Image (cartoon, rainbow, N blue to C red; front, side):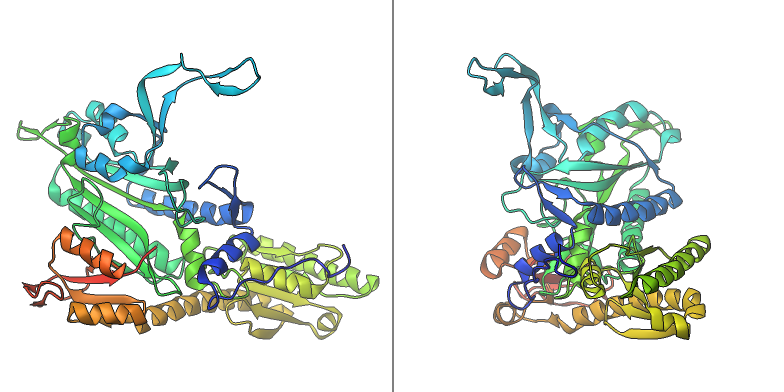
Length: 497
């Protein structure tokens, strides 16, 4: 390959085709790619490193709130789902089912399913784990002394999707799912709200994504839940995306699986349940909230690589001197362990190509040093979010780099927060809403006390769903924008992913 001539296909611009722009970034930033299985993606090292960092941070947050990790099987007997009708109805159309346990070879050499190897009971490939976990809790919970149980697992799940998009909606995806059991309804409610707050803190402080926390409407809540809590954010095409959910399941699953415990008073009681989770959808959300027409933009606090060093030289003598300085800096930075740093030493690629390549991959900060900089004791730092170049003394790099990373993190959050606020509207009538959402996508806040059937009509007519009942809204009364009845509920409606 000729020097500096590597192919960099241009990314489709957001305002030309937002969907294509998203797919271009996922592909070009090497976050993920299609596999040989429809709806399943290969998460490449660049994308998986982000997921690993999310895991590390969240896992510690879970442990800090008293939770421990466990593992439950991928395959769940169909009979387990039969015990909770509402729950299974929410996933029935998305379940992958294993019916045979062996392949055989025909005389023609073709590999096929062995008809004589049918399972005695079909197994569902895990779409979520409430049923198999509560079948285990039935053995674990006998007394109030066995409660609470605070467990989490990091696993993959399968939900058969008709329309797929990498990270946002795939047949197989990675997630964590917490499953807890409590002696009282108040404890379960406190747990579900606590975990929503954990998610909110993580997403806002590490991903720099502003969210709205709220309770799902009856039509949108998790199958079998008493309440579903959610955090929602707005993508740059002004649609909503569900970031995380936390469910208060009440006694739905303890009753379905006949799980009881002996209380301190000597009575048999049903324990109360919660479940909560986030998925690899978070990576797609990062792309849709922060990225631009140059490529991926990754907030520093979640970026596996925060600073990339690009040596600049033309002659071999300059090369040796510049690389020696970068090696020295790398050793110093490693000892201090304040930020992650790597030097791009790839041959046969000019600095301009490398600049574009690292911009595409979303590295928050670029450090450039050339022969002239060495003589002057200077260095150039380039921000990925704004493209701003900052010239600093090399002796100040250790203090300046963390400052800039903090500024980038704060700037990304503020920019997304302002965008969300600018595209959030209040409406008082359904007619006003229908006209407005056709002209301007965004979040629409309205009084609403309609039924699940009303929500279905609204979705059919406007393609918008009730995203959540915000937890921060004051409980004043107003007229429902759809029915005209008095209500205290305000609901965010939006078109969503």
